[in-house]
Image 1: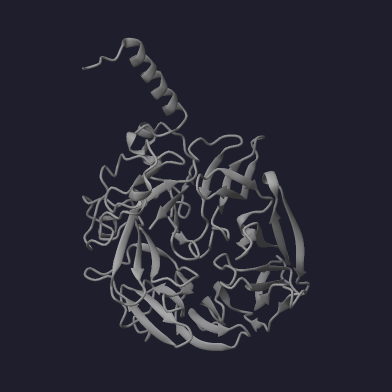
Image 2: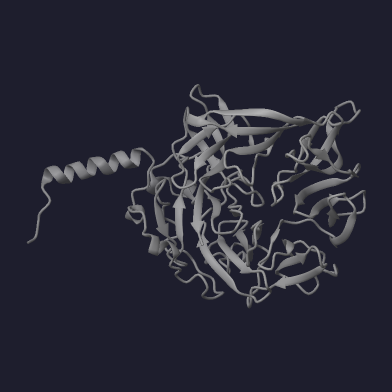
Length: 472
């Protein structure tokens, strides 16, 4: 029997729709339900081909609501939106991000993640802090008294402990009940004015060591800090209650770009090493040079492959054409086996990566057969544009993963829908990151909402972005 919608009910629906639009929530029906567990793990076309795929209704599609999950219409993976920054104002975020690809944002039992909150407090003052969110719902658990520049790192075994630095001190934070936290001093490095891990590091996979750069103040008229030493610090434990600073590498006069640590090795990337140009170099934990890996420092991450080899992944995007480690791996991801000194070219088939697409790389810390890559176009890609750098190419604006064994297998997980806007040159970049075993993937996206304000009925800041979860 057919049923007619009464005028009063129709009016109520119109009112509810308007209220939803005024609140900044997308009103499309594609985000109306939480998908089943079966749908979450059922891949669509994730291992399918290497053609260019334009997302359906790319100029107009809207993101799911916070906490809702939808499947990528091309690749079939489950994507959950964890944050909502579409209502900027006092006490509300203007941007929420999982800061960088090489960091592990998940705590030890994967019940929580840390993200960067940028916005205003209830009084309207600028606020940029680290927040702890529920990893399933995205709900706020802790508003921490630190910023992302303090470089928080989760403890590998205790889900309520993380480490951070402040000035020249390393500190430990313990999360308590009802949003409370306490922190205590581990060690003050009095020989430096400050310490850093370059923003691209994490605690070693065994949870025992952190790589630091010690900085000192220069004696110039405009006093500023410069990098002086790189060293490995062993965290205190029962056998070593005081902790231990290892031997130092003097890098005075160098431009350090990155420092990453595995259980046995340190990877350093320099934009300029003692006036001898860019390079990526491998050291042991005593800072002895083992291997010059290449004459450039690009995006990359250290991790572990399925054979438990400690490895480092990077792209050949900016490599010199005459570099011996890159000549056979043009337009590819490279895997360096750190212990054995070998290089494997992780090709993507035909066509290969087009490095007019920028990239970020994330590697699991635990044994995994995959390395994860996000790509982003330098301009808003459009199949109809004549500028080659703006046309829609294979792998454009995607989250994907590549087999680390050199077989050439690639799985395309999702389109991230993030698009450049205005003066923002960084926040919109997806910067894929993974948990320790590679089973959960985070990325950032502005979903192009700056270009869709009429359809989404939302007000977003210049550097707006939100955090999304993919379950491979």
